[in-house]
Image 1 (cartoon, rainbow, N blue to C red):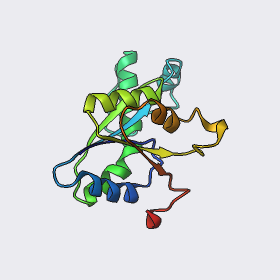
Image 2: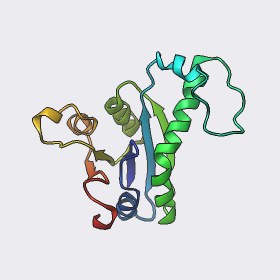
Image 3: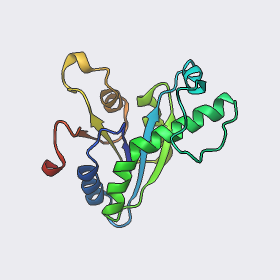
Length: 164
C-alpha cells in the first residue's frame, strides 16, 4: 500500500505512526509531505535582519528569491514533519519526506497523491469537518476533490496519543 501523509505539524506522531505501520505492512511505501504557503511579499521579511536560518553553520544565502523560498520551505518543512518522521522511524517505518510550496494546500496535496500514486491520503482535522462554517478547511477540500480514500485523523488536542 502506498500512503501519503499530509501534515501541518498537528498530527499525533505516535498515533499516526502506529496507524501507518498497520496500513502499509512490510512492503508498503510512505511519503510524508507538508505544504508551505509562501506569499511572495514574505520575501521582504525573509531578507530582513530579524529572520535568520535555523542552523548556525548555514551558508550565506544567495539573493535569488527562489533560493530563499526553497531554503525557507525546507527549514519550515523539516520542523513540521520531524516529529512524525521520528515516530515512524521508531516503529521501523521508513518514509520519504517532501516539503512542498503551494498557494493552495489542498490542490498541492492532491497533486502529490497523484504523483505518488497513493492508495490512501492521511490528513489531520484541525477544525470541525461537518460544521457548515468549516467547509473550506484543507482536509474538507481534499476529501471533496480526492479520487481515492482519505483517512482523517483528529489532531493531538482532540485525541491524544494514548487514545489512538
